[in-house]
Amino acid sequence: MLARVRTAYLGRVVAARQNGAVQGAGTVDVEPLAGQLDGAGNVIAHGVIHGVPYLRLAGGANAVVLDPQAGDIGLVAVCDRDHSSVIANVGAAAPGSLRKHDQSDSVYVTTVLGAAPKQYVAFAPGGIDIVSPARIRLAAPTIVLQADSSIGLTAGNKITDSAPAIDLDGAIAQGEGPMGGSAKMAGPLKVQQDVTASGISVHGHTHRDSADGVTSKPL
Image 1 (cartoon, helix red, strand yellow):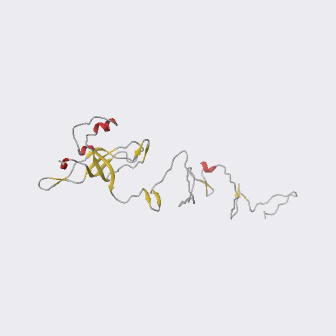
Image 2 (cartoon, helix red, strand yellow):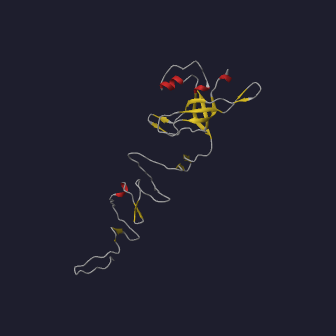
Image 3 (cartoon, rainbow, N blue to C red):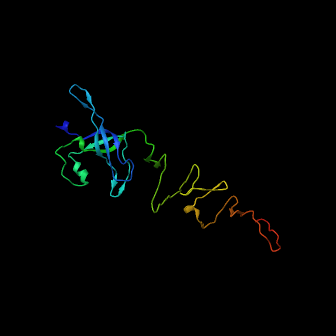
């Protein structure tokens, strides 16, 4: 009797829907990988199970969008009743049929076999790493960065605002976005080199005196 009860198995994702879209969780098509055996010991491959819902870490309107992708090999759980009516109604419903512990009522739980990730959030003993080969975007009405010690910011090329940089006579200036407006500073401000404002050197400028002469440079 236990041999007829399907509990969980390893399956390969043949096709995936959603795949990173900011929507509700979708479904995948799964191929069970542990084959069947006939009376002579010959291996018979399983067919593909279509429309399998997958687990997404979510609560209310909050979620971690990390959807399975084709080629993933993961743990698939088998529900004890036909849940097709529950999926269709997104709520309580009578079983869709009298089948029990059937692979048709599978749920893809998580990926368990695969290569090293290229895009990840790593929780290590020395801290947390967020790594992406493409980009990392933070979007919110308010973003707070708080550190008891220091905050470092390093860019291989340049640090700009979200607007394109402006080329002024070969010199790259800041963009037209929120960093392009006026600035106020409580000071004091110490600069090792000269400061130029509106094309005039603060350290090397001169003035006209009352006799229409030219003053010396600032001491």
